[in-house]
Amino acid sequence: MNLAQDEARSRLAAARVARLATVDPRGDPHLVPITFAAVPDRIVTAVDHKPKRTTELARLRNLRARPRVCVLADHYEERWEALWWVRADGVARILAGVEDAPEREAALDLLAAKYAQYRLHRPEGPVIVVAVERWSGWAWAAPGPPARPPG
Image (cartoon, rainbow, N blue to C red):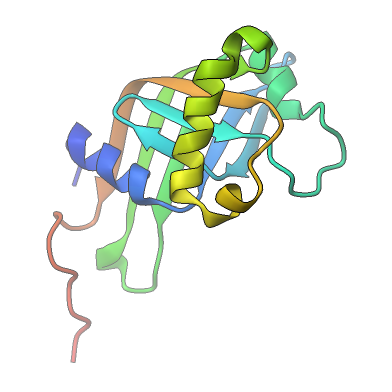
């Protein structure tokens, strides 16, 4: 069943990980897992201290060329009645300059509220803010108590 916008937002906000899809300048898709925080029509994520090959990440290069993105969160388990996915389509901005400091700090506060690791070591890299324009989602079953396995 298709999810109502409020239910889609709620499920995405509660997810621990999502995937950020960008498109590179040649038009090729690029997909990476992200930690994130979501508030009504915004999703924030940051370049953090986890090991990376470079600080000039492909997702940042892609966003500078093409800021349209998709964020996807999902839940899978063998009991298919529990399956769901949520997709948020929007336009992303990179917060990295001095002029962005207040908005960047507010975004980092949201991330620190969700992830203990960010309370211990606040991300120092750029922050990405997605202005969500469209929410969509699907779930096998309507929201409510989890279905019981047969037997």
